[in-house]
Amino acid sequence: MTSPRLLVCSLLVLWGMPARMHLLAQQCDSSASPGAQPQPIHGCRPVSRTPHAVRWYEALAVAATVPAAFLIDEPLQRYVQRHRGATSNDIASVFQHLGQPEVYATVSLGTLATGLILGKPGLTRAGGRLVASVVVSAAASESIKRLAGRARPDSGLGAFHFDPFGGSGSFPSGHTTCVFALAASAADHLHSTWATIGLYTIATGTAFSRINDDHHWLSDTVLGAALGITSAKLMDGHWQIFGIGAPHFLVGPCGSDLTVSLRF
Image (tube, rainbow, N blue to C red; front, side, top):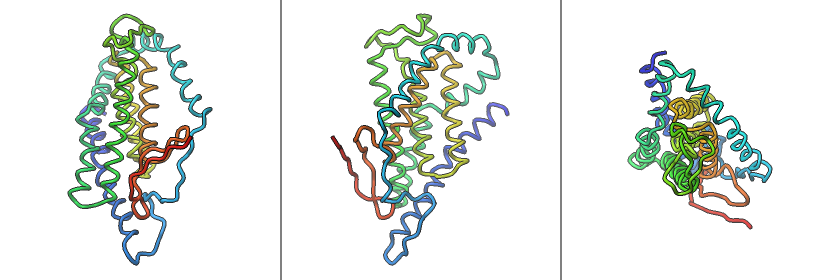
């Protein structure tokens, strides 16, 4: 598949999300109308669903993948750059564009705006969660970047060069963080196996592009993916981490109030 065709297919997956969410929102909102019989709705999140409480060993297992990736950062970087060619560059260029702010910001804000304009609470909530997931993940990513000050692969300083607050921003990958946040949040709302596969394929492709272009180490993308998915799961109300429940909307069968719970 040529690069333009791949780009078109990828954009169709992303920009088709508001339409799919709109259909789910209509089902979800209609079930809450007066006199409607309560029925299980595909794609409509029930109020009674209890968030998964992330255990310390689950968090530790995910956290352990980052230092494990550190061990192969430099060998992988050398391998990828030795085998880098026109094909890999073409593929990387497509996914690199999909990880740009103009794409994930357009999709998330576009979904929110569509819901507001059409007066569809369900779609508005979905868009709000998309925006929240991207914003929270981006804030976390940028904070860690500044604190770590890790040198990028193309600097020639190596994978273990850190200069806290020194201006370098390799760790983690911001592109990867935000596109995984968008993919995870959208997949949670769409409830479609094929959409989930497509979204996570795009996110993984974005991570690949950052490594191929020599802008990030493998561990940068691993942490970015973890941050993005975690942010989305928290904002969507699917996870609680150490007793902290993130904001989630609850309207009718899909939710209505913005709530935040802290348990100690």
